[in-house]
Length: 337
Image (cartoon, rainbow, N blue to C red; front, side, top):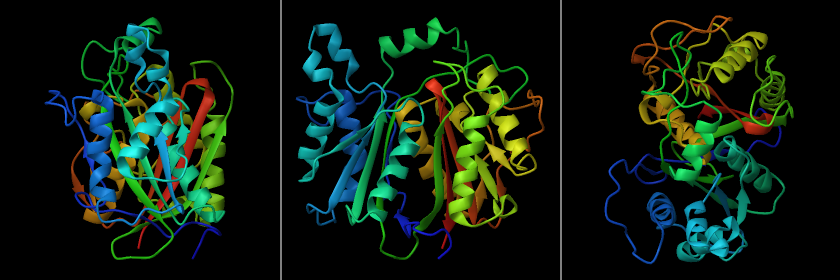
């Protein structure tokens, strides 16, 4: 097994083992006593835990950026606490270990998987459920508007006419294990580096993302030439897309087929990394590259091989990246086995 200490898989299957819940039209809640966010996160997690035996050796990691922040509008600070959200979900799902919260801007979903992987490597848990979710709230929307980062229409990642991000809401879940089984995908390597460049702006040189990718490749024990496609963060903001293009160029990945999926459903914040990781796993298993919706003309200073059409291709390795406010960056390499 390449990549010393790498766990042997994300146990997945798009319907049975990994479930993505997206509620654009906000259907009736599953439980009126729970918030909208709690309901969609439970909806994502239940298919994974329904056939699992959960013990003290089973970890639970929650990824979110803002959680139930809308509770603050009614003056309920306690109900808005992320620890409370994690506790409610853990109890409903039958977990006995203390839940862990990963809230690190927009890398949270991918970073939570890295944390789960490392906890298994350390022997603290045998298996880990990673559950991620965020919803569009007035607080989140006003925050992005204050940075003048919102697009007036669907976002266009890496495109010359891109004008900003669009927001979405989602929940996603993944089951991590060190046991081999049919159809799993192996986490070969990962890395997370914060360049502390700015409270919101990314490093102009892509330094934190470059170092994150270098760590992932070092652990994986493979060259950049082995990567079949890159699932980029691709928010369609001027600075993020430019930073990623520079970072991929520095790593020798400019010619590697690359996409961003945010043109389909927007930026789902703390769920985005895990949601896009799930789709990357599906792409690996189905040997299919997905196009970048909204892309027409390259708008970055460095060349990127942006996927523009749905293409069948023999796929074995994927690089997934994520970047966020505060200079946070995470990279992960997946292998189909």
